[in-house]
Length: 190
Image (cartoon, rainbow, N blue to C red; front, side, top):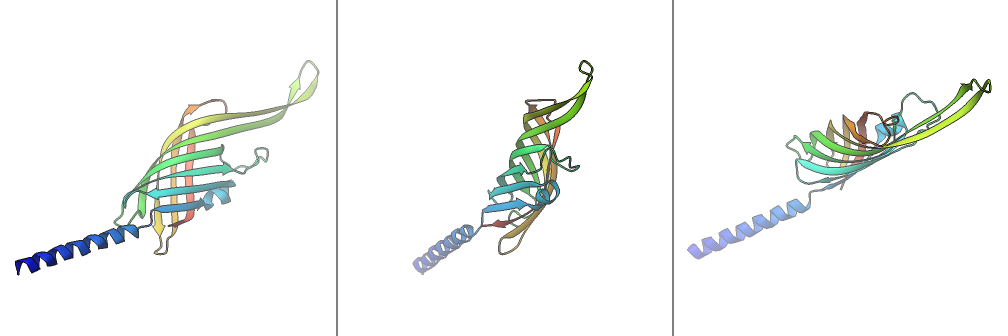
């Protein structure tokens, strides 16, 4: 009787262990996302990849490419021509990497400043055209907060906002002190 009971307990523990392993394998840990907010408002392509470490944390990276023409004179724009943003997120929900989160990020960004103007030259008594195109390579650190919502099939939507400060700048005349981190992204968890 003791041997049968011991055998039954061992069999039950092996079955339980295998079910946990199968359940862990079904967890989708990768996400790809596109930021619709930046595309619509700022004419910028912004794509992200995020890897879920566990149910409460993840790491990821975003790449932003600004499509705005610097000579267009548009009112609403990013100063960043390019940005690479690695980040770490901590989620505060009972669901797997879902709901409210806080994010710490670093950002390498390139800002440009194009100025073309006519300046009066007193010596020639005429206006001269000048063109100045300068860039600044910057390194920023910051924080953001947001929320992520994922359907059972893997479709996801997230909204977030935050700010970072450029710590290192190659050209202080061009580089701004603060950088935004904004988004309303759509994506897929797989």
